[in-house]
Structures are given as C-alpha cells and as structure tokens.
Length: 158
Image 1 (spheres, helix red, strand yellow):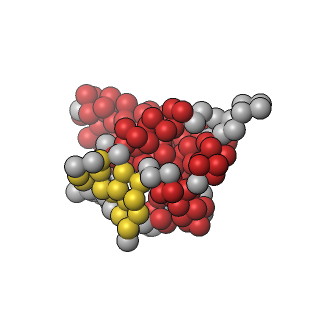
Image 2 (cartoon, rainbow, N blue to C red; image 1 turned 30 degrees about the vertical axis):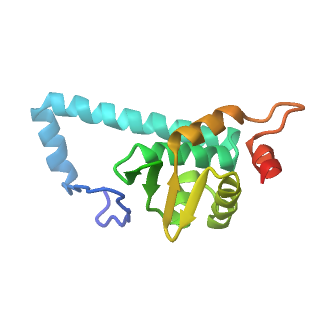
C-alpha cells in the first residue's frame, strides 16, 4: 500500500523479478484460484522457514548456523560442482547476513573451519565438501552440560 517501496536484493543465480500493482495481483488471483493456492503455499513455506531460522538464532551458535548455511547453499544454483565438492562464490558479508552475525564473526568461524581442513577460502570464494561439513556438524551437536559444543570442538582442533 505504500507509494514508494525501496528494497535491495542480491541474486546468487539467474532470477526473474516481476513487479505488479497489488490491485492487479488480487484481481488475477481471484480469476485463477490454483495460482492463489500455489502462492499461499509458497508464502506459508517462507513464513515457516523464517520461524525456524529465527529459532536457530537463539538455540544454535554461529558455527552451527554457518555450517548449515554452507550445506544449504551447496544445493543451490549458486554452487558450482568441482571434483572434491563445491565452489561457492560469496562474500563474507553476504554469508554473515545469511547466518545473522557480523562479518568479522563469519571470518573467524571460516578460519576455524579452514584450520580443520573442512574448507578452503579464496577471494569471495569458498571450496568445500558438503558431505564432510554435514558429518562434522552431526558429530558436533549443540553443547550439553559437561560436553563441549561445536565452537569449543572447532577451537580445540584448531
């Protein structure tokens, strides 16, 4: 309902953006109920994903969220397959936004993962094996009383 709407997005893959006046959209959805149902499902999935991601900000540490994001991105169009895994062209700032931390925090976490030989870093580029990261994340469950979490296990190994 605003006259002017300012947003910025960075696409990591070929993307199509459609701009449509809200009145036209509502009219079109009224004429095409199947499209309306599909749109509602997509929006519901996006809301559920946002709720889950918000919960992770509270219950998972930075390294857990970083590993999860890298594995998720490895299955996206942004990742390029290579012999021993994938290459992801992404800046530390973009990754920090995806994880919900400062760029410096992501840089430190990537350094710890690199010291564990779980990934290689380059200029705006990460190379890693998603299966190795998944196995590492499974081994490093969240901290429990008397047991270190993923941050401590990475730091000890580094």
